[in-house]
Length: 337
Length: 252
Image (cartoon, rainbow over all chains, first blue to last red; front, top):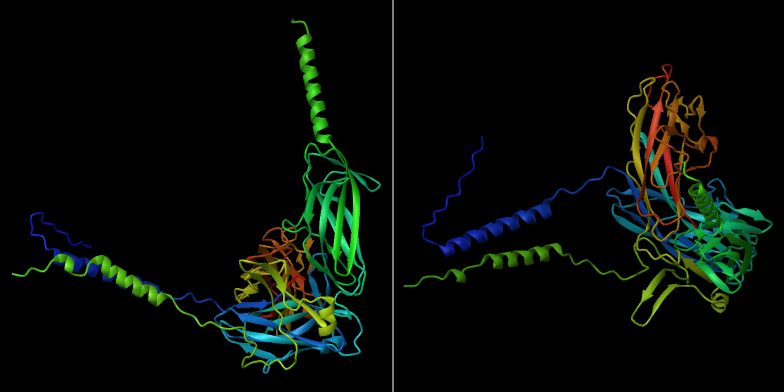
């Protein structure tokens, strides 16, 4: 049983101010010492052995003339409390989907991989190096284009992989990448051919007649569009999505700038929300145009579809209301039994 | 006779002030200020080109987003190159990062017809990249020397593949597979915790399979991987292991 020491106070005792001040100072001192101890001697969180890497920048787009060379610094960070053994390599990729994700081709070994090397003194491509705990290192990627190199694009990922250590358990390793979009050309923005396809309303009830869509004017409409790059060089596009009636613009949305690689297709997405979306108002009745204008330094494309907004829901509601009203009126006209 | 006045002693608030100042001094560290220097003990630049960095510059008189090295045609003609690093339209100090919570998986002693599971977590921050994918592949099936535990095909009535998860709930269907749950997981495929896939297998020349993806910016998106192994009574005893690789790549 724990007994607390009683704190006796004698109301009639003689006050001792100097002593009180000293006591309270001691209390404050004790409190601060306790606080300092808590701050400086709190056990640090120790993480289980894991993988924690960062790589910057996540994208490099370079247009280079044959015979020229550049270098770009990539910084790799080991955010873990253990050193990690890594290997950096260049892996070719092809566009994988409409969202701009790469499909790595590690088995592929094209001759243009020899354009890439690391200018670091101690780190080489395809050779292991150690990155100390909670530290970073710079990978100075050098790209040298031979004089006789054809005017083409090459796409690759700088992949930094953790080396698997032999161990008794099932081992997990991680890799982190940064994409490199390389255009070999004799001009800053080599020509390409862009083509918008599949501009149409989606996830909305529509009636399609030719290139005209009948839509309800109280329901929001989501649109989809794809952009094909039929050329041999990538295009960094931007543009606008508009709903308009003649020169009156009812809706305008900027597009998210994106890289459309040569001979590939990407889904067009809006800046911000990501969706090309129009919420018509009750006054939006009749014919409208949905236009997509895409521009880049080396190409452009434009497409328009016709939309007819009709008060379908409002009309149905009105009809239902009239029917209900009529039936009520008819009932009220019946002679009482 | 001299009586010392109480207010001439150290007052509590003075002590507190003094100690608070000490505390502040001790806790505020003055870190080194490093200039952006291209020299280091670990690398050299041996060509007359440049280091490119994208960025945002602001002052009272201007607000400019640029990518150093972004040149006009004339400059391209004279320099012979143009470089854009990073995504110009996304400004973030967060780097593209990939975290795996645990890099060794212990499924314990496998007992016939008693599934064994283990988990770890994958976490992604895209930083100034717009979208990403995380893909997974195993080097080989669970193996002990020449003995293998095959990759799961899920329940006999609901077969799964490396790209298509399905129900694996029966204790009499054997193999090794994984389930995904959490952020940026395809929940139309991994419907619930009973849905599994076998890993893509490097030995079968499979391409790595996507396990997490997003078409936008991700900030600490985390998904849990549940590894599951189930063996038959005829499976030879042994210590079975494999190596699984996760690859995190930003979108372009």
